[in-house]
Image (cartoon, rainbow, N blue to C red; front, side, top):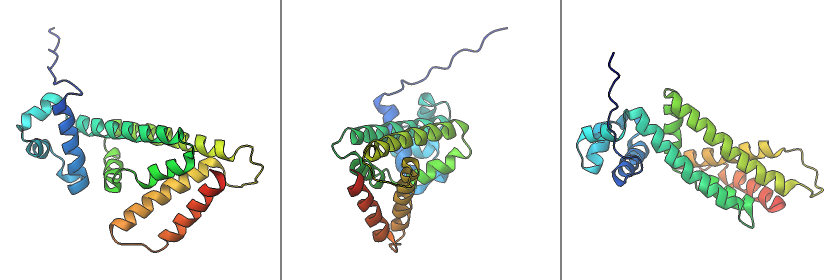
Length: 192
């Protein structure tokens, strides 16, 4: 029995590979995952559609790689925030000035059907939450102040608030945003 011939693939990390990820990211942000096709990616960067499949075996693979690159970028931002003199403030800035919330929503929706993406999203959220909890626990430790808010809960509340505020602001909702931001700012000022 003859073994299958390995398919030749374009080099991962090459400029064209990155331009395809850029195109996928823009399409997801601007039009949503329903518009993300190999044809749309190819048209966006001015290449033939079949070239997409030279670099990615499937569209799911392209989507997973797009998320991985985004996750690496965001974890680097979080690591820099942890090293800052005021890590809680910087981590909050990362949360508030995160990637486009539409992109986050699109990846979450896609994670429901792409198992490998679901795993990547899970790992990213767990790692970024660990980083947030580390900063919160460090800031709260040894201060002698009594708090009934565990660092893990504070991390979830803050990131959830940041996402909700972004999503709502995109469609013009502002009610309650200033009050929530004030609570978070006061919390940061107390602990940072």
